[in-house]
Amino acid sequence: MFKQQGKSFYKDKKSLKQFTKAKTIVFELLNESHYAITFRNFFSKDIVQLIRTMQNVRFDEDSKAWLVPIYLKSNFIDLIAKTC
Image 1 (cartoon, one colour):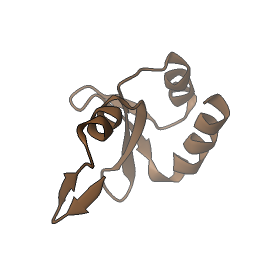
Image 2 (tube, rainbow, N blue to C red):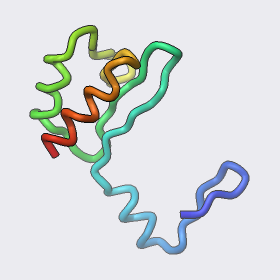
Image 3 (cartoon, one colour):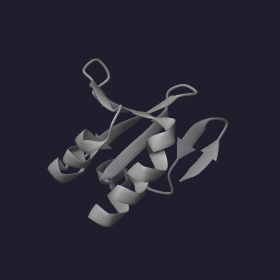
Image 4 (cartoon, rainbow, N blue to C red):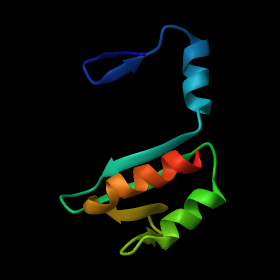
C-alpha cells in the first residue's frame, strides 16, 4: 500500500482484497484518557471475555466499540498476545 496526500493506493486489486479481508483488531485513540477497540472481519469470544475481565472497560452501543482507559493498553496487548 502506498500513501499519497492522505489517500491510499494499492499495487493491485489482489493487495486491496487481501487487506479488506484481513482479520484485524483496531485500536483507535479517542481522547487523552481512552481508546476504542473494534474487530474487523472476525469476532473472538475469547478476546471479548478478556476485555470484560478488565476494570473500567465498557462497551459503547453507538460506536460498537469497547472503550478502554489508556493506562490499560499495555495490559490488553499482553493479554491478546497470549491468546492469539
